[in-house]
Amino acid sequence: MFALRIFGILWLYATLIWLAMQIYMLPLLVEQEDKRLRLVLRNAFFLTVTNIIPTLTLFVICGALALLSIGLTLLIALMAGSVTALIAARALNILLERYRGNTDTAEA
Image (tube, rainbow, N blue to C red; front, side, top):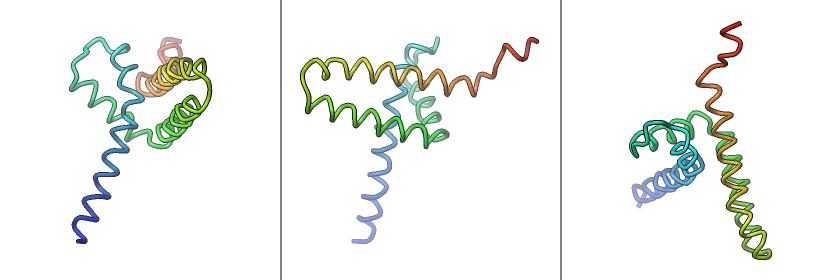
């Protein structure tokens, strides 16, 4: 019984990480030159785990936006997908700036 409870908790954490990775997968497919699925999954996992607080914040905001769009009119529901994609793309660009380094100050 105890082992099943531990397995359930681990499964819950794995599911939450997988869902949080979804925020970065589509923007990574657009941003990366090498579009292999394994590379996209690895990079999304790396971004999710190393930036857990911003990722969970985005996850909550996008989830709230999705729930809000279900309860409101169709126009808001149609806009929620594009706003979520815009938020995810901008978040990816902000996070990738940390790993790429700032080339403007390096050249000066």
